[in-house]
Image (cartoon, rainbow, N blue to C red; front, side):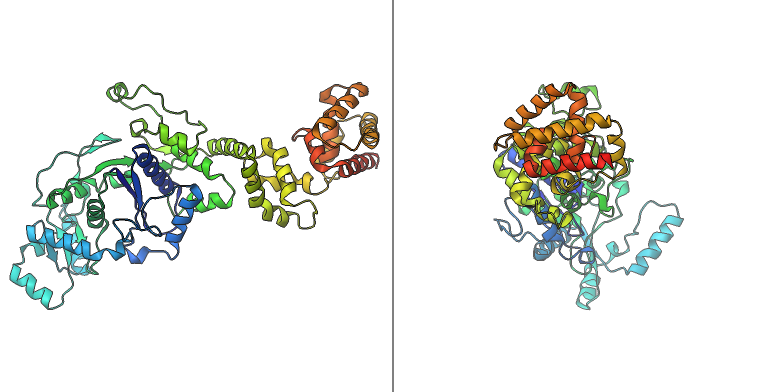
Length: 508
């Protein structure tokens, strides 16, 4: 069975790059009819942040990325916290010791620092002089019995031959062991493994068939393949995902609060839009070489602003269509996608109720004295403002005139009013007020539309002259949604009051 894993470290909130990695694991697993695991790589206690795991799970739940096995769900390969799997890593470390592919190192931190400095001054590229590799078995056993602290290192001078690596995205990569430390540490003196040993052991024991992870792990990839070879294990297929960049071209980092997914959740972005945005970052760009382009599938990848549901992403997703280049996250594209996903939800009655409920507290906090903040009223307000909203949290500001009376004394309101003839302005509002008073009790968009169009024909004005006057009287604004929907939401009494007040303010 195809099985993938998303394996974050609990060192802080999940960032956009991490969420994209989780998304691609989800999409690829579902595309191939497989499953995926959430595994917490918490072997570095010094960097662990309390509550980080709960935060990661909350983000995945908010985004609708349901994992099949992991914390809170269990599964056939539990536990899914690496800190609870230490016995397994010790077994793997001892296998490497017994086969001669690893050895114990008793050098202190001060000794290691001195050795590195000496080697660097001599112009050597190695980072450790392999002092402890030459210890006899008897000496090692004696020092272990004496309780001396040690680490277990890979013996990189005794690595078995293996095939060159092939990546599902980057294809054939040139191996470079030069970037790796000499005889990398696999098991630390606190008996916790390094990422390299733990990930290899877990991926094999859990039956992981595909590893989709960030491009930053390419440098360590040869070491991981060496470990598989030393242990006599078949490695999974690897796909390294190109990094996401900030608009200025800098690398995204957890230390930058702008990339935390929870920040986007708090600002009211639609999770479907965030996933859509992340999925298309680097998906669909042309390959860099002609040979790769010729082997690409005939089916065209999605456009970089294609509005896609999660199910559509699963159907269309293809690792072959991912670019090898790093991708910039364009905020303008997110705004475009969010607006479209939001409008899709607004047209669904059940989703509209959920949207109104989710923004209810914000509206009440923004306008604590307004009597027009019920969920039912907010639903109508959202429907009217849908074409103007990028984010749902824009509603209180963009549609302020739906919740409280507009302020005609503001500079912008007065500037707009001065563009109208005072005589025409007063007559249009007076005639409409009279028409509303004489109209029947039916207050619907259709009846209001008929009335407004009748008033327009009788005014001798065209729509571009007439409707801005009504919009200003109703909202004190120059732009906005249609005046008839606004009137329908406000109700007869509030509309008449505003028409009268606008006339009074114009005469003052």
